[in-house]
Every structure is written in C-alpha cells, then in structure tokens.
Image (cartoon, rainbow, N blue to C red; front, side, top):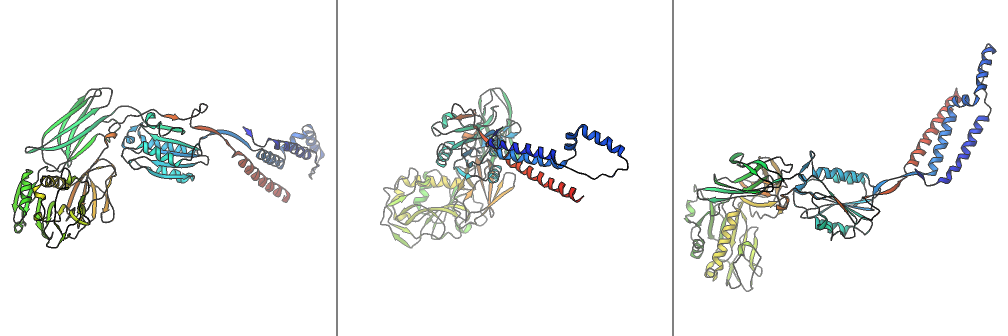
Length: 590
C-alpha cells in the first residue's frame, strides 16, 4: 500500500495529545455505599491498573480515537496498484460466425467469448468502449461508450449470425474509430491469424483472443440433387477433419421421412463421395451426418428440387418466331386453348401474347405485350448486366416501336431511353417476363441472340417456380411481388412459424440458421434454403496472441492506482462520530 499525501501523518501528534488529555482529565462519579470496606477493595483494584480500567470502561474514548485515526488515514489517501486495461479507448471486435457455435467444455465458443468480454468490461476504469460485430456487413454496436451498464447490456444481447466474419474489413473499420496511441484493440474469434492481421494492425496495440479447442471435425462439404431418368439422383461429399478414423451415419430425408441411409467409415483427413440413385421426387431434400463432433452447423445440408426442363404451354395465338425459338432450345411445347384452362392440371412455363394479363393461369410466364398503343423508338437500346441477357447481344438489334407499359410494379432490364422494352417481376405470386414490343416490329428473331434470350428466360422462370433460391445467413434481398399479396409467413422444416414479412414495405430477409424453409403467401408455398458459407465448414482454431506490445509489457494489463479506500475510511469515521454522539447523548440523559 502507498500514500498520496503522507505528510498528513503528522496529525498523529494531535491524536496522541487527545489520548493524554483524556487520561489526565478529572472524572467524578457519585456512589452510594453503606460500608467503606467494599469501597476500599475497589479502590485498591483501580490503583493497581488505573490505565487499563479507564480504557476498558469508556466507550466514548474508543469511538473518538478510532474516528480520528480513520480521518487521518483518509487524508493521507492510501492506495494500491491493481491490474487495469491498457488504453483509454478500448475497441472490441466480436466474431459471430457459424464456427463460433462449436462447443468447448459444454459451452459454445461464442458464449465463452461473451463471458470474457464481460470480464473485460469489469476491468474498465473510466475508459470508452467501441464494439464492432464482424460480418459481411460490419456493424458498430457501441461507439465510445463509457456507461458500464450499457456496455454490459450490449454484450449480453449479442447473438450468432452464422455468416462468415470479414475480419480484415472489421479491423479497418476499427482503425478508423481509433484516435491513435490511446486505443487498444481486443479481437474475440476462433481463427483470427497473425499473418492476416499484421498489415491492418501495424503499430496498433492488439490482443487477439482465439477461443476453443482444436478437437477435429467431420463436415458435410456439399450435397446436391438432379433429375436422372424417372427419378432423382443425389451426391454428397463428407470430409473427416479428425486426425483419426471415424464412423458416422449418413441420411437423406424429406418432410421428416428417411429416403436414404448409409453407415460410413472415414480415415483420418479422408474425403468421401456418396452417390445416391432413384430418390422419389420431393420438393426438397435434407442430408445429415450423425456424429457428435461439437460443431453441428456443418453436419447438415439441403437441396431444393426444381424441374430442369418444365413443359412450355403456348396460349392462343403466339408469334411463330417465339414458338420456333422454344423448339430450337429443346423445350417440350404444348399448344393450349385459353378456353380450356379450367380443370387443366398445368405445371410448367406459359408463353402468351396479348394486351392484358387478366385471365391468365397462375404460372411462370413470358408475356409478349401486343398493345396497339405504341411509341416510336429513337434512342439506343441499353440494359443491365442481367442473367437474362447472358450471351444475348442487343447491340445489332433493331426495334422500331414499343408497346405501352402494362400496369404493375416491374423491374426494367432493357430499355430505349426511358421506354421499357423488357421487364420482369411477380404477377399473382408467380414470376413473369414481359416483352414490350411486337416481334413483327424487330429483326431480333432473325439474330442468334433471340433463342439465347428465350433459353435464359426459360431457365430463370424454371428456377423461380415455387423456389425463391438459395440465401446466405440473414441475407436481405428485394423480391418483386408484382400485384401479389405482400404478406408472407416464414416457416422452418418443422412447420414452426418464425416471423412475418410485409414485402410491400420491407425487403425479404432470410433466417440466420442454415436449413430449409418455406415462405407462404396466400395459397402459394415457396421453398428456399439458407446455406452455410463454404469458409465455415471447418472448426479449426488459431493461437491467441498480442501484437505491438512494448517489451516491458507482457499482457494487456497495466498497473493503475486504486484510490477508493479513502472514501470508505471517511465514511466509516462519519458513522463512528454518529454512534459516539448517540452514546454521549444517552449517557448525558442518564
């Protein structure tokens, strides 16, 4: 223990004077005694040990003496050195990726990281804290916060996002928040490597807390399905990342029913491919390996089945160039009478031509807008880099006029000036591509790009039918619903309602946990899958380390004075004075 104001120890002289004054002051007490024999005995005992008796029998003396001692010690300001965090601005980066869900000692790495972060917050001594959540889009959760309660609440509220951490960008963002040498960086992850961060953290004091145990992992690296003859074939790749041999069961399920099961034996660091034939046709398939390796996020994979070559229905009079174009790409065409649509079980893609969308079946569609209201084109054709136009060049295409745009919320992908030529979106809950010009007003069908466009459109519509696509964890994506209902309910594969979305007001947001999900809009069910990032199919860890620490500083802690003791000494002295006054008051009244 050390003292900030040791000169105040001179006050001990006054304490000694107080004791002397107390011993030599005269005190009288009236006693009534019927005989002086007992009084002589008491007087003899008093004279034998006068000092001890005086001290033992006077509580006021002790209270006053102790209060004076505590006040003197409070004035000399005692303190001791204790461990405290280095830096005036503590910048924390947390890794919320899927690999942080791996368990170690009965707790996930993420839970252990939160506990260590709370312990770190407990060592704050007035420093400001900034907290960054690393991900595809880094998020600043705290910026120079000094309220300890707010810091704790934010840390306790952290959750896994299962997306891959973008640690390099997170570190660059953290660097922009720091103001120089007063900042200290603390990174909580499981695989932050020294080589990856050396450049970004050059000259910055950094402690990397890599959490977890490198106990090995078995990973379902990939799983996919495809049509093969009259059935569905599938393939899966399983990798043993252990240093020893393992055995595991591999299953494929759909809607809770086991469709395929096989026991596998894998040698150390072996990768094995499983081929599956003749699976029954289902809307989706889920593959899993049943092994308790502490990291379950990469033990599952899903595949949504879509018909790669759905039938094409042409309704009524469709331009022969369009019919010939679909025949060229090998699609199976069925001529359909619009009057016979009721009761007809149609499943595929519709090709129609007309001036209105009313009365058309609720199926994916290519619609050639044949409205008589036309606008002459005078500006060059321009378009976005879109999958519909892959290898379909419009530079040499001539279009004389365009039809008036149909009512609806459409995305324009090809235009001439401000006049939309090709649009796409959703109509009655189904994807639609609208060609806003008559094929007789263009030389496009005579060019190679026309059948290529039809093929790209056919593939895009096939993939959109009852299938929203594959998403990364928590991915937000704009989905054009056209005139359809914007109210969607999201369910998992256990038919549990997770949340609701209003796509008229917000973008579509996928769940964070990888798996198969359903989006229900009215009577329409859309399947989609949340995929685990390929970089998260390993649960390896790196060693913790410290960067840019001075040679005399071996840890992230430094010695700071703790001066809180003087306050408590003064407070206790005040309490003693209050007690002393009460003792004096009662004695005086008695």
